[in-house]
Image (cartoon, chains in turn purple, brown, green):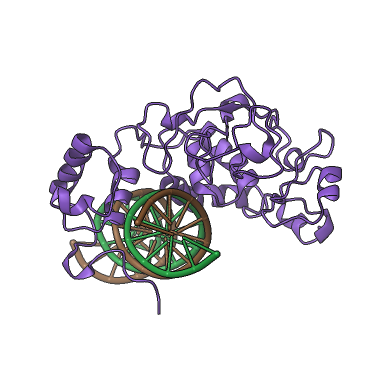
Length: 260
DNA sequence: AAGTAGCACAACCGCGTCGCA
DNA sequence: GTGCGACGCGGTTGTGCTACT
């Protein structure tokens, strides 16, 4: 029925990682770099599945991890990004240098969720709890990834084929939900990847495009969309070095530091 | 001091997506 | 064009720690 297991479970360890396993994994990645997770455990002499190794490295062992408590600034940023992106933890993590999606997800579920509740804000909708029931469906403006209808309407309403509402200044859904969010989106290389070697899939140089501007479609990582209006044509052709990464975003990411 | 509840976070699981043959 | 394998993501579970009774 289901898909085959990612690895031979009979001969793999599970549960907490030991110091020795950590050391082996670190040593191997230092020597050979990230990538090819499936074959890594065997090559590194670990009785773990590749998935587990990847998780351990990304969430715990990576040298650029910040760890420690989240700052108030980070809190607020996470809230803003969550209101904008929803549970796209990897995208949110991409805007928080040194933080992992897992860490942010956990933090959201344990701290921020409660924090918002105590403020009387629904953590899912980011609307006042009392307000949520009274809001009619057509008043709700959210970023949706469902397909929109006609091209003409899209252009008229600034809705892309990805169903993303591109806000006009006065009726921006983002502004409505995040009044203090500066929507002048600028593109910058993903912060945490600046010094990283490109990985097999997410590879691609960011070149020196920090001053170029991607259209909103590209900035959200919708690859090769017909709605792409980039002047620099980064979305055309293959994605190998087009600057798309997370959720397709590679270079076309929102630099939160420009928002603040 | 012992038992229990709640919290925090590491790790696992299943599915979607992408790239390649 | 299609199928398969590998990777990445989000949701969920497990486990250790701390606070409280």
